[in-house]
Image 1 (cartoon, rainbow, N blue to C red):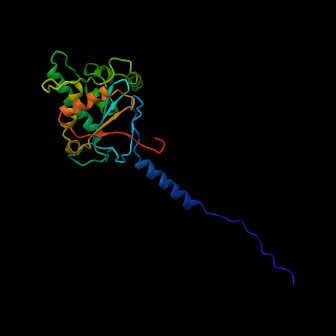
Image 2 (cartoon, rainbow, N blue to C red; image 1 turned 120 degrees about the vertical axis):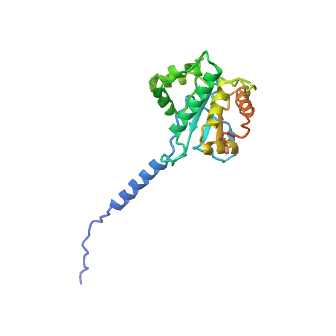
Image 3 (cartoon, helix red, strand yellow; image 1 turned 180 degrees about the vertical axis):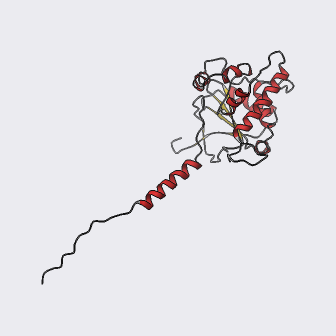
Length: 239
C-alpha cells in the first residue's frame, strides 16, 4: 500500500498583533523618556560608588567647567499638566529670572537690567544659562544658534556666572543672587527639596581645580544651603 502524501502548506504568521505591541512600546518609551539637556561644555564627572540618582524635577543644577566657568540649570515640576499652585519648568524659570533681576537692580541702581516680555519668554526655554547680568539682555536677543556659539566659548569673559568668595550677604555676588532667587521662587516643592539636599546638584569636571569648586561650595554654605548633591559617574571594575 502506497504512502499517503500530505500536501504541504505554507506557514502564515500574522504579525499584526506584534506590530501593535511594538508601536505601543515605542510610544510609551518616547512619552516617558527624559531627554538630556544640552550643556555648554562637556564635563567628565569623577567616579564614585554611589548609586543615588539626582532628581530630574525640582532641582537647580550647578555646572562647573574645567575652565572655572559656572552655569545654572533649573527644572520645575516633572508633570507638564501641573495643578494650580504648582510650577512647571518654564513658569518657574520666569519667576526666578524676575526675582534675580529685581535684586540685581536694587543692588546696582546705576547699572539696571531692563528685560522685555520677549526676553523673559526666551529665558524660560533655556536649558542651561550662564552670563553676567550686564550681558543678559544682549544674550537673550541673539538667535539660538548665536547663543550656542557664545555660551560654548569658554575663552570669553562674558560667559559664566560671576562668582567669588564673598561672605557679605548684604552685597551678594551674582551666583548668590541667582541661588537666592531659586530658593524664593515660590515653588514650595523646590524649596523643600533644597532643604533636604535634593534640590541642588553640583556637577564639575574631574579635572577642574578644587579651588574653583570650592568657590561654589563655599557660596552655597554662605547662603545656608548646606545640603546638596555632587554628581558623579558610577565607578566600574576598571576604575
